[in-house]
Length: 177
Image 1: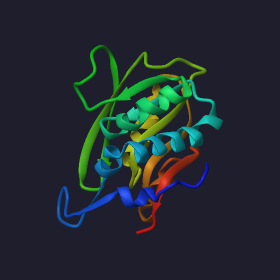
Image 2: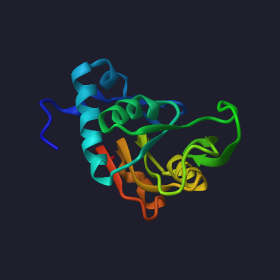
Image 3: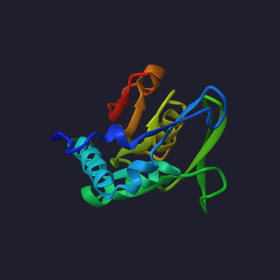
Image 4: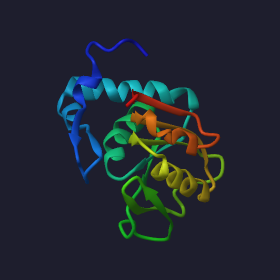
């Protein structure tokens, strides 16, 4: 990956006390509204993922979708949505998981993948790893192999990657504190 023509960290805004007191929300909307920064982020994430030779990119609703579509196009692979409960038609696998400020749930179509599919999980942020761990478990329930995970941002101080045992984790913008 080549050095960026600008600092992508400049395109991430901190929002204190959101969604509740004590949480510093990492807002990616400044990155998304800059065509150059967004394109560079997508190209860079695709470059991190390419060596894993995925057949599919799975992404977590909703901000993960923002990155996954462009990455799928660049890598010419399929897209698998991981959605909130009740949003997918047909038969699904579901998982409830802990967030740093509550609980949530995800679903995946039971027929989203097949054995021998190679899936990379994509999302905007890795924090404690609860959402990503639930996503990896759901993907595995469909029979596919999860070969890596890639995040636009990683809050390294929360050590979420430790919860993704056996999965190679990439982050475009690691945040130390």
